[in-house]
Length: 411
Ligand SMILES: *Cc1c(COP(=O)(O)O)cnc(C)c1O
Image 1 (cartoon, helix red, strand yellow):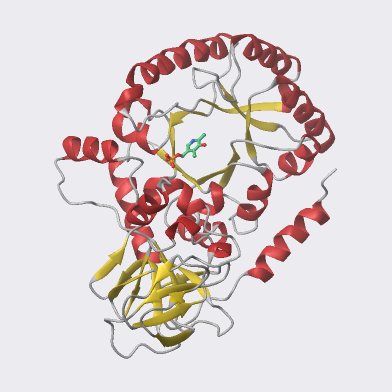
Image 2 (tube, helix red, strand yellow):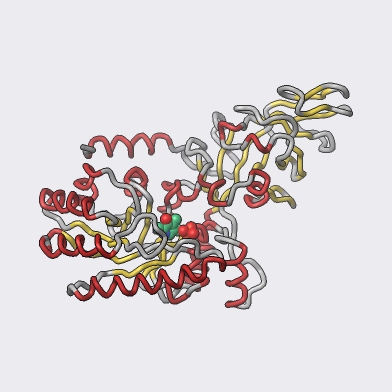
């Protein structure tokens, strides 16, 4: 059984692992060879924009996947200081991290995995959670009796995604359990998740899911329950299907300045008659030049024969490699920014290093800032251009940025 001591140790380890924010921009602790900067003003700008267009409903900030790579411990405090009252995570381990930086009045919902012996901790700390399996609900009820506190459950309905979720048969079972244990369960929500609201290709399926949701919700209401929050929409649904907003929307990707898909952006622009992108990117990924040298014409650079110098080259070695999430498929293919200019990545990406061609860039020296994602002077490396090279979607690239890279808040 996971106990409070173990959880406290997870939290403590995480807190010790955090690098304190530097007072001045770019004044990084010298041991950091690569870091991620969080633009606080840009994040707050996005929240304000979302609060304005979704003013008819409550926003739950989705911070799973280490807040889409932005850092749970960094994002949660900023969000809760700017009007966010609900957070959602995927699993217990992420819940521990969010909980360690949350106010007492803020609500936290686990949307996915909870080991069955951990409901004691979850219920004791009044953390809400999705129920998609009557057996889990039975375990939660046991824990509730032990803790003398009700389990705060969101009944997740299977409406057509065919992933997690209670089908009609299991919903009946769950309601029976709740009827028998009224004091131990509080229905904090009834919810579902759409199977691809970001694409018009799934339109018919989404519509069917809404119908299924409403039918099953009736079953809950017939038993006399009034759930606190009805919710179904992710970012894409909240934009493209306004009637799915209900009482609460679970917004992930939009907070961080990205559209779920190009189609969703078009839907927004048509609806609101906006032509400029109202969202701002929050994350930048940076490093420094570690070594500079000249390579004569006729030589190969880095491992093997992937890059042949047909002319004399000046190169910069950067201490970031595939171990840091700089994908190997960017060998001979990626780009970085140095002195505000685009430098081509040449040769294979190594475990801890990459090599950039700085032949046309003057006076590069060790210690100079390198931008892997983000802006430097007039040039930008977008996550989207980055992910096109590596065939990843934005969501995947962001969440694969390793937890071990320090996240620094730029005030
Ligand atoms: C990830 C997730 C969301 C948020 O999705 P976005 O497209 O990032 O807004 C909402 N609900 C559930 C159940 C999720 O897993």
